[in-house]
Amino acid sequence: MRRLDGTRTLLFLEASIVMGADLLAAVLIFRIYLRNRRRSALAFSMAWLFDFIFVLSAAQQTEIWQMVGLISLPVFSGLIFYGSVKFLEEESLNVQHSILAFFSLMPVAFILYIFGVYAYTKDPLWTATTATALGISGVFVVAGGLLLMEVEEIYQSAVRYLYIGIILFGLHLIPAALFGKEVWYGTIGFTMSTILIVFMVWAMVKLTSSEKFQPPRNGGPQRKVDIKPGAMVVDPGEYRQLKEKLRDMPVLAFVRDISDVPEKWQTYFVTTVPFRGDFKTINPTNLAKMTELSYQYLESFAQSGGQGVIVIDCFEYLTIYNQWESLMKFMAKLRDFVIVNRGTLIVVVDRDSLEPQKYSQLRKLLG
Image 1 (cartoon, rainbow, N blue to C red):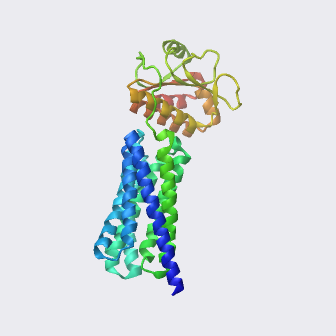
Image 2 (cartoon, rainbow, N blue to C red):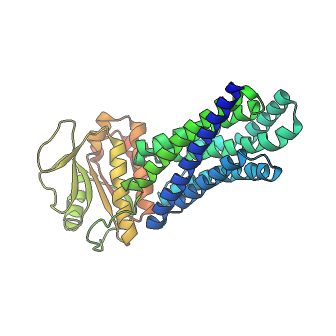
């Protein structure tokens, strides 16, 4: 009897912690939405509100509350998925084809999961109601976590913790459907849910509160540039002419030659050696950091209607320290950024410094 009372006390305590975390996340993220009007923040805020309703309904014994719980959990998962989709849209990112292809497996996986639950429980009502709600919710929660992986290069650890927590939470709903009717699983399953939800709340508040999630600041003087948007490959001679045209613009430049860099440029000296001069340095292997800097720079111009210009005058140097495939993926991502934000990417390459096949591939990629 004492053991039963102790279990009930623990479940009540954990439910109180989860509902408190849900309400705190809903309020904090909604305040963030009011500041930046990002719909992803609104969706995430509403998701935690519905998770609160789900936990509250689980503590009730009436049939109406049970129906509310069966509806609120899928709504929570749908809002997590929708928030992830809006997040990618706001960041001007496309989903990789491999992720989309993975989604095609989910309908088959879901029906196999339903068959498995029925084979184990032999309970058609449980399978058709609770197990189905848990399964469909798990599918969309995991899908939302997979989508968030696409912004890891920009948000790094701020989003990494979140998508790991979301995927784990989605996966943990599978044993909940199988063993949810078992007395021994009640404490274990709810404790696992409590830990994962608190972790997800912390990670989501951390992400949405980060400076990168805020509306980008103006990137500088919005002077019109007489240069076409898009990506281009130029030789050193063409680059010298373009440099004069862009001398008074706040260009973002990754360079090796720092002998004649315009003062107004935001310049990064690409080197493996710490450099204590007037220029910021960046390692040639740190393509993720270059991606992040480029994204923030282009977004700041796009928000104000201006045209950002990125110069990469170190391409041959990058080929020394990076695999060609990785470098092409990096260039493809920058190309997508400038196209979406109507900016310009200028890659300076001496044709004789590359193999003809690689030079041709680069021209096609950025053409």
